[in-house]
Length: 129
Image 1 (cartoon, one colour):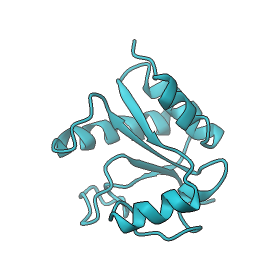
Image 2 (cartoon, one colour):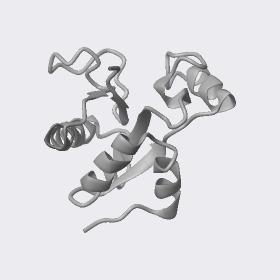
Image 3 (cartoon, helix red, strand yellow):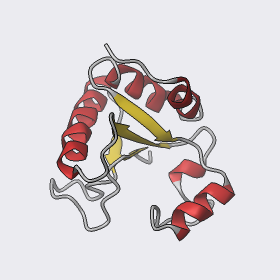
Image 4 (cartoon, one colour):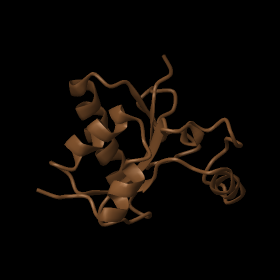
């Protein structure tokens, strides 16, 4: 069974309890790394400037505290392996459904089963209630 590194645990600790519960279950079955939980204004501004986010501060789900979004990727990280992000996301979505946690994945924003033009493979966010 895989476990999170101290850095991943620290990032996950900035997230909503439902995201913590979700990824605590995911790591039991799939090795992954938490890249980001809560983002400060400077971090959000940088993410937008670098094209990793389209949402300005303070409107990103990452900007809430606790964060309503987490960027989590399969480990070891390989940005070029898009299919691995898709397979991992399907697993995460299945675990979330089992736990009764409603999430949206950044690779399929409109949830039509087709990866979107703005593909944010590691992004998972709680659905707005």
